[in-house]
Length: 422
Ligand code: AMP
Ligand code: GLY
Image (cartoon, rainbow, N blue to C red; front, side, top):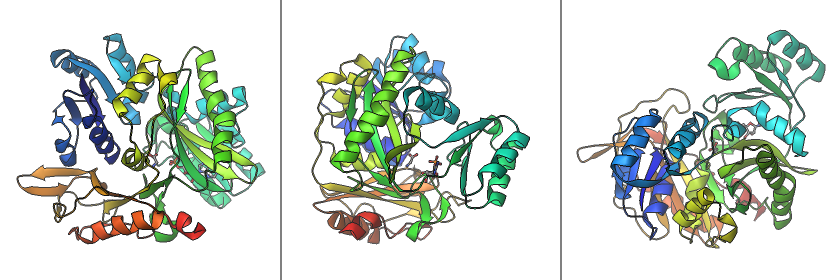
């Protein structure tokens, strides 16, 4: 079948790589794509914000299945528009995408279904929020309710920081996303990322992963979209996986179905493993980036079968297989990221890197003749597999040593928690 993949990040390059390997794929179209994804399919010049134009492209090119990578088009309702045109789609409806699009929506579902999450209160105005803050004290977490490009969350160590974050939200720094604010208890523990495919009723749990959100070594510096990941995450023991499934994921999927708004696609469960067990930090309604890169590196089954089963309601028949190996990815970002950075700097040395155990997924890259240029904040995901986390890490950093890109940087300590555990 002909497939259209929407997105342009490292996550989508990894998905495109997996989709291109499927026996079900005839032509894979990718929009907007990046330089690395040219190896996987046809990059098409399509305005992906124009959902009607996307539907028209699918009709013209006989596309039968659309995979939506990022959250914004899902929250904007792209899946609904395409389904109304008779297309098969991987990704939730606009209403179900509120699990990522609104923190308050998710808290209400958690309350309804008794899902363990942070204690919280929602506010539409500054004064009552300030009063609640004074009452609660610090540390405390302030969240803009809506999508804020990963910048809407402040884990405040002091009341002053919390107040400043609240004022930012209500001053309009995050536009409409900050008109409603959620104040949460600060949870303590180790974080992990879990992914569950769902067709609205059944779920298939994928292996765990761990992300590295801070920009610099030692988990220092500003929050980013993620500077590296590895899978599996040792903190997710069999017992924790089972508890997360029973206490968090199953009731959430059941709750969405009971409301008449079933969730289909991939649910990304951001977890805090606290002293009392797993608690939900947040839901996202798409694969993690860069977690997806390590999952695709380990996936042995045909991804198109899994993704179409979510759309067809036949997920109960699927039991995907994953490589026992550890996969690890290191993000190379443009100097200055997540603040301001230059685009258009040349990257050399990628051609010399190959092998079954190393794969470079592109994020912000573009081609200019023979040259490969940076075209974003997160630029490359150097991804490796190994029998141990140490072996995977050594392979990834050996590949990075061959890359000639003075305008880029990466963390040198990806997977430090797993390595410290021994
Ligand atoms: P994101 O929503 O991905 O921008 O990042 C939120 C990050 O903030 C999470 O990965 C956690 O590290 C942290 N966080 C969010 N909510 C809480 C909470 N209630 N308690 C402690 N940390 C939190
Ligand atoms: N790596 C975290 C995210 O994709 O939101």
